[in-house]
Image 1: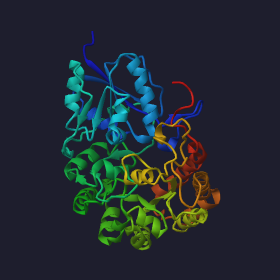
Image 2 (image 1 turned 90 degrees about the horizontal axis):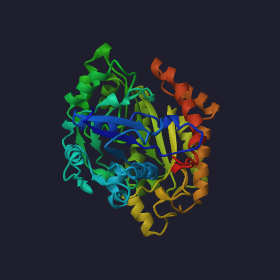
Image 3 (image 1 turned 180 degrees about the vertical axis):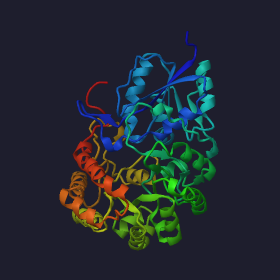
Image 4 (image 1 turned 120 degrees about the horizontal axis):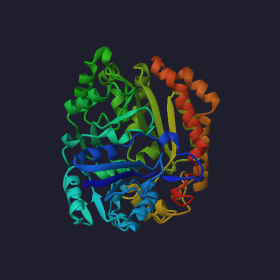
Length: 448
């Protein structure tokens, strides 16, 4: 007889369209689940369902359920929780959305984790065992990142994209108006010890083709980043390939870029956000305007591919802004790019400003049955919400047209075989996803 406490972990999807597979570009392994698994005592029997790629078996025996909730997945997470609670199984919710709106989340969960889980999770598990669960667990400080020990065994059998995610630090020092990361971490940044990161890299390097350092800004602590890259560089011919996210001004440091490349970096995701200086000023990212041109030249010269991301819906945006931005991304040979609608996430300065100005289109857009992905949740100043949504889709279609895939192939820095070999498959995946994600539901268009 199995007397182990049985815990089910769930990563909810944004939603599902009946009869259609989930968007492939959104099927990366989920690091928060692995981190929670790593914090869970060994005598707990773990199960894991990734709602993006498999059907949840609600009737599989378990004693408790834990979900990590983001704003885009909140509606689906609440419906999953309801299925378990109908069966008398307690549900714990944590993550960005649960932290930013704990009172709403508490309506759908038996316990809400506010903040980071490292210092809280062992106590939560013990309280679950004893049937003494509290309604709220709040992290009072910033836990040490030395406690991060992801357990990736929960990923077995799941066909994620072939990239391994690693956390080298948390948070970002910038306070961008629209960013939920800044709201969650209060514009603070902590670094994980480089030797701990290297230990994790070495344990995984023979199992993956590419590492993604998921830090919101890899270069936020330059000294720590340099220390880690020096260690990776010492791997020599046994080295790794990696990509990350980084603020644009960091690419002005030539020595930093040289070390990035020598340590195995092949590309970065960088939030360029807008080509309009007025927009950048409003979003608190004016530094992009002064750094952009030289930074992109430097990245190209050092052989680091660029995944450029842009947001639309700020006050300076008009229809011509979209064409200008796509042309810019093509001319600069971006490996891939994202042309996204501006999203007012709860808890951010953007959300509060639009709320004060009476410009929000919905109350709690993330729960509204009419809201679909790519809808604008507010009223922009110089365009209609529908125009911004349509222009975002048109921008993606233009950028990923056969013509512009070909043009960028000739402009992108593809000197390394790995980047060249993967260029077409990655661009085709994004091309196919352009229409798949447009109008995607939050929650389900059919019953669970």
